[in-house]
Length: 271
Image (cartoon, rainbow, N blue to C red; front, side, top):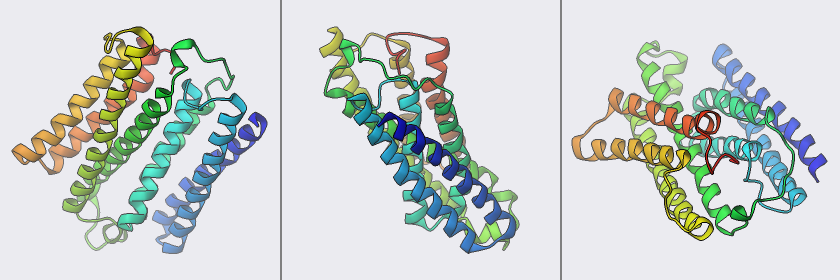
């Protein structure tokens, strides 16, 4: 099954790259059918990506969520899933053109990690693993989409009025609302991540919170996005300020995932 997973992983990378290239062609030649093909390739990639994760899980004899490679490829899967949901819901193929490079970079990062299957350490042998890590993947996916939407928002004024992109990208007010919904979704799942992680930590190590670097930065990320929602709801923060806040939040997400593992090793160094 692991050999099948490796083959599927390679095919998925090719499909995501092809989808990214076609999204760029769509913007360059301004032909809507090209965007439909790009979306179709991304959907096929997501289906095969799901199959690859299932094969990985069967081959490893556990949920494929316990090391850098597995979390990175699952992170890419979450980004792809959430971006497709927003592309479909809001009829917004240009979002794919901005999301596809982020997806490809994350899965490219996964490709650079060791694919070796190792036996789980005792602390990870828990049913809480699936709840904790899967909610983190969905949270990061939603935050990734909010990041992409915020970048589009910040670039929106530079687009020519009545131009091709102007016709295919919602007005800034709608972009702001979509980004807000994505942040709200991500914060909900991140809250589940932190709560399930605390419960799991108490079962595994006898303490709900140990101020491990990843725990600390997860809390920092949660506070940033919670502040975003609080200031938006209570103070009416919208527009450019909110977009910049969402970008900063995603920088915290990336540091929580990659930066902490690289520079601040702790008890979460395995993931």
